[in-house]
Length: 245
Image (cartoon, rainbow, N blue to C red; front, side, top):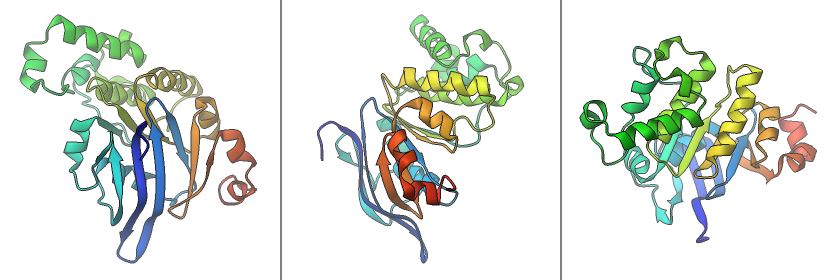
């Protein structure tokens, strides 16, 4: 395995009974990389993220994170190691403010009670910085339930960033967003990629193109092709199975 690889998936197979959801996938993600995973519905994109973060066990193959084999580790252990997972539907505490949502997403080594009742200046500064990064710095006192769908997506990313992950797994982060919010999310992801590697599942091809990352195309659980977005769009196999040509 490359010493530079943050994440490496080797010969990964995930099957449910006789159905193969992930078919011998190999994937490498470097530190600071934006990797977009695209493909038609049912291609196995979300299942792949589930296997990487530990939500779904691998049937065969291995997963390495920071040089350590983790496919037998729990989802919680992988989170503590530096993985952050955002699911398709935002999961925030509607009755709490934006600030409180970030505050209780406790960084490693700090108890929830100390986060709530004994926040020091440094921790408060971290919250402000995360809110600034995620376009929420002017919304800190706003109840999360009143946010737009796009702002809730940003808040969930903020709740991950306060935990200092090294790898973010984002499942359809711009689903339901306005065009303006989508463009702001492009800027957000590009900013945080300077510190975190990011794997993004997305259907919005314009969004993927603007991210300017490496692209992996899944089809029927297997990797169809990989490359830059211009190479992907020019591939006749992609046009046939995904782009509708």
